[in-house]
Amino acid sequence: MKTHLKIILSTTSLTIITLIGLFLGPEMRGHASSPASMTLGRTVVPEGNDFATTVLGQPWDMTNGPYPDYYTALKNISRNDFKVNGDGSWDLKSETTDPHIWLHWSGLTSTQIVLNMGDSKPIDASQYTLLSYYMCLDQAPSSASGTDEDWAGTVYWMYDRNAYIDPATGRSNFAFFKQQGLFNNNGDCALMTVDLSQPSAWATGSWNNNPNQVKAFRIDPINKSGKSFEIGWVRLTTVDSTNTVPLSWNDAPVGEIKFYLSRASCGVDGILVGKHANPNGSGTFEWGAQLQAGYSAAHPLPIPESFEPGEYTVYLKDLNGEVSCAAEKLTVHAAPTLKFLSPSRFSGSDYASTVVNNPWGLNNSQDIATMNQLSGVTYNEGIFSATTTGGDPIITMNVTSPIDTSKYRYATFRMKIDGTGNAGSGWVQRFLWWYNGQGVDSVTTQDLVLYEGWHTYSIDLKTAESENCSSNCWSGFPTGFRFDPVETPGGTKFHLDFLTLTTIDTVNRGDILKVYYTLPNAPGAAVTMYLDTDTNSNNGRIAAPAMTPNTSPGGNPAFDFEIFLPTLFRPGISTASEFNFFADALSFLIDTTDIPINTYYISADVYDGVMTTTWYSETPVIIK
Image (tube, rainbow, N blue to C red; front, side, top):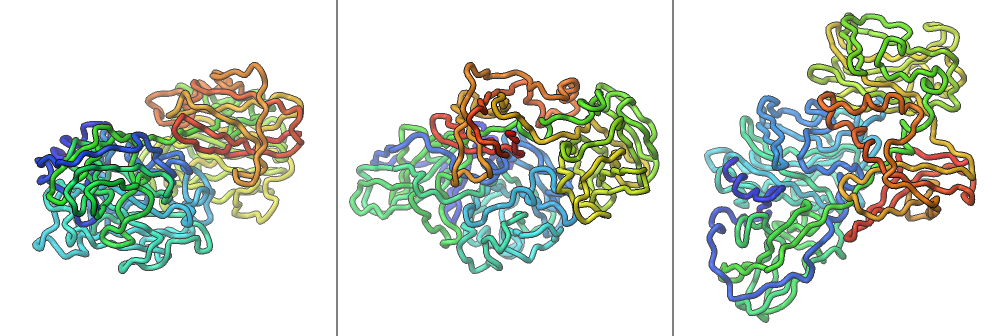
């Protein structure tokens, strides 16, 4: 399989092989030239609306490890054999007959809503309906290696936060691996495409908002144990009939022609994208104007949105099997992305910085009042590290004055635990606070599940679930604030970077509102800023009047906890930290003089010359 992939991956992404019953395999690596000529009516097409890209800001392109960690996302798959390849793919090996991949995990019932998962960002099943994923099999199915069902794929989804092993709320099977001849040779690859909105002979349940949006989504690629396979990328998209590419041809023999896209070269390793009866020998096929059935309506041929961004060769195959290629390459253009740094859950005024006059940067013992059941405590380059000696370790923060809960509400920390994650074995964190004394009137939050590797966790204490309080739990003026890092048995080592307790961003009307953001993949894009009382761009936004002169790029934001921002720039500690882009922050200064007093989210339209994407800040800002 590796030899095959190295041949086809001549550019940064995977070559994609055709779906539905017409896998081209090695026979297409030599081809006769067709007398036809072919041209593209469009050489650049937007990637379209992909859920992971435009909602999560994290495309399922397999360039990183599973999210939020291996333990949660991959089940019955060998950890020792798992590998993230530099070409943007995962090597996997099944340990049982039920390997599965949670692409979007829901979080767990009665735990805090954190990170970029389904409980905070569910899938709108009325909008995102077309699933495509690229897969390679190390062993071609054969009559001697099992039945069709052994080599069948399955998609599962669920609408709540329960930890289903086999979710019963939605399922779509598709048993066309073997019977459709997609994998004829060891190392063969295919693009699997499924229209989840269409009924299928193998489907149970329906893909809809039922009544909640989809909170978790998974694929089970095969039903064979001990088999190696590879997943290249996954896209869950809309079906945009306006995002088309006209494919025109002349002088082709009368009779059906087929159109292909390839990452490799003309006539090699193509993916079938369309068919045309071609009664006249010339014509134009509007690829993407509608879904064309492949094996069935539930398993259509892909459209432009099904393809990951990159450059492709486009060719046709005529009735005689001869090939003609378009002279121009087709580029699927990556959607521009934007990340807000301010307003956010860590950009408001910080309690420890403004009241204690010493941010809880965890770079020395002055940030901590007391600690229990911890040993081996170190402060190294701004990282607090310790090993637990019992199942209830405690870190009580340095609180010099009662905390005004009407102001300070967002608790954010960055943490890593050594070892293999498992919420059931105590990989959970909790906050406690009290008014008259610890144990007298303490309030304890429900568990916050922790995941492998460095993550930045943030909760709104105003809305966080508590285990011994039913309403108005974060209120008044607590005199103590406690951080319980983990609840595993003794001997667990963890690392804590910082803890902040911040306000909603607030500005007086007439003052300057400073917005900080980054453009991770579109540095030259045009950005238009708006204010909105909700996060729906379709029901009215207020144009954000810019101050003149504006400053962009703006350098590091001048947050209250700027004193310990350098602790966030630690290659080797967490090169993937979302805070690493602070150094590249752009700024937009808003004149609030004529803006009505209210609470607003910041919205941004990003246009890079090809497509426009819309983004919203995670938290609002108050203009008072």
